[in-house]
Image 1 (tube, helix red, strand yellow):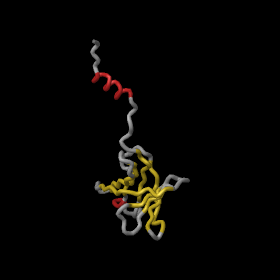
Image 2: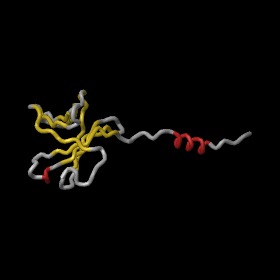
Image 3: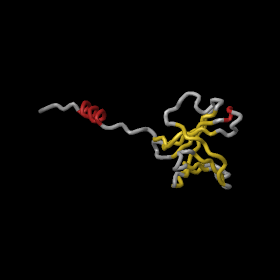
Image 4: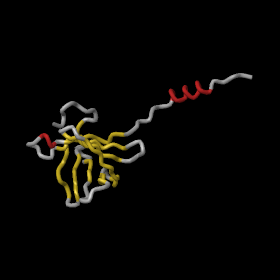
Amino acid sequence: MKKINVTGLVLAALIAAPAMPAEITIGRWCDRMLPSIPQYNRMIEIVISEAHNPIARNSFADGSTNEQMLEELGGDLYAVSDSTSGDRYRVVASSGDLQLLDEDGVIRTARRLENTPLDGECR
């Protein structure tokens, strides 16, 4: 009877399998809420999580961060799940910029950044 090393076969199969990304980055943007006061700048990153949920990650100039759960509405439009004022994000197809909206319409537009973070790019 021939002995088979099952652990080695499983390990070889795992090594040969393509790695699935933990999450997919939709984009990154610099939101200059008050252009003359850079301490209010924030970087917004929208990702699709491993669980296939869209999330907005906010990194503020003071070093603080938070996450917002989003609902994908289609047409590159994302609603902030727990927003009482109808906050939404829309990726502008022509420029890649990000519109910040509420129930009254566009509030302002955040500038698109490259997907690889650079030190100080949104300050």
